[in-house]
Amino acid sequence: MTKHSNDERMKQQREAQQAQQDANRNQQRAEESEVAGRHKNDGQKDHKGADKGPRGQ
Image 1: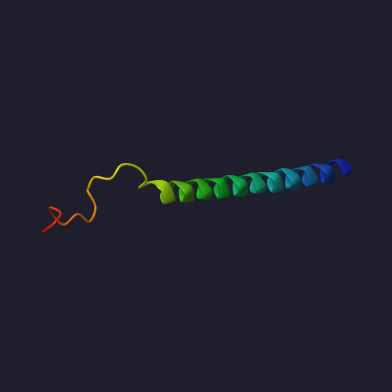
Image 2 (image 1 turned 180 degrees about the vertical axis):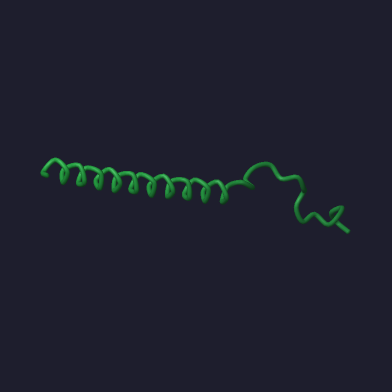
């Protein structure tokens, strides 16, 4: 009987470790997508800005 209870504990530990790893992966993906979302528009702009025409008029 002791072998059976050891197997159960080992199985529960593996499941707990797997759940922790999944949670870590999900959090890392969420952080990566948040960072990518914040910076996805960085770079060269297609327009000149608020230029309303020739200067001095």
